[in-house]
Amino acid sequence: MMRAILRFLQWFVFLVVAFIVVIFVVQNRQVVDVSLWPLPFVKPAPLFSIIIACVLLGFLLGALSAWLSGGGVRRRARELARQNAEKAQQISQLRQQVEAQKQAGAQPRPPAITHAA
Image 1: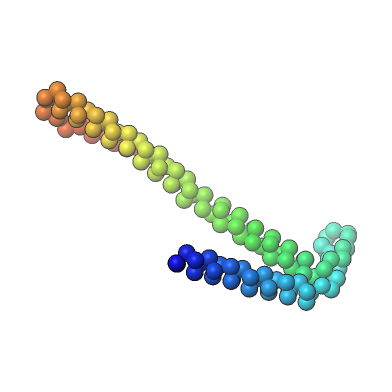
Image 2: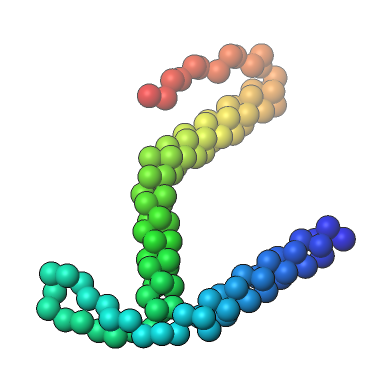
């Protein structure tokens, strides 16, 4: 039930945004001259395409910036995952040793403590 409500809400928001974009495009069809000052050319383009291109460029630059700023966190997560896998392997080995000692009838010795640097 909750999933259906969220799906409906998602579609509703999508349709509202699509409606606003269509109204924006229809209202801003006039052609304007685009010139990048140091470059020697002028190109006419519809105003809505320039604004949408600028918004898209801003979104992409923001996404790139967020991805680059999260690099340290992703690196640390990979390191921790590697350490976790090593510790899980050590635990598995120690359990096997304890099982082998139990089957041999010997008293289990405390495992040797190792510290990973």
